[in-house]
Length: 173
Image 1 (cartoon, rainbow, N blue to C red):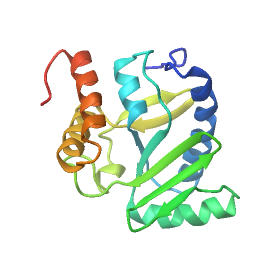
Image 2: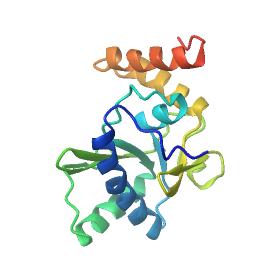
Image 3: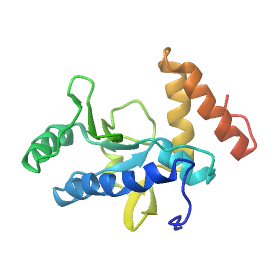
Image 4: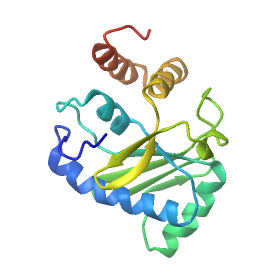
């Protein structure tokens, strides 16, 4: 399903964010680093809520892909704001634009390093770039796990869960 014409509330920012994220996606693809998009873009994609703001693009990649990506970013002269191989994440910023790449980890039932090479994700058109994105069921799983694990972000995550519940017309927690 294409959503080319649907934009979040922060449309101008998002229109700049998309090509920035596409550049990072292309680097990953060209270098055989499997990826799957998740986070607020996935939430926006499923709800199509034009009142939402999508401030960044979140991507899951294999742990070994993070080290490889650091080298590729340096080679392509792309600065990253933070690289924490201990936390298994890279934050790439350009002004207000932000792409966050996280290790897929082992905390989810259906999302892990092995599943990144399988065909269990939704294929979507990311404004002209085909990508794989988590399914709605996987988005629910991520929110519920994050809500129980991350004490400091509980209120923010609960807000996202409530928004998704409104869209789904059912309770998640």
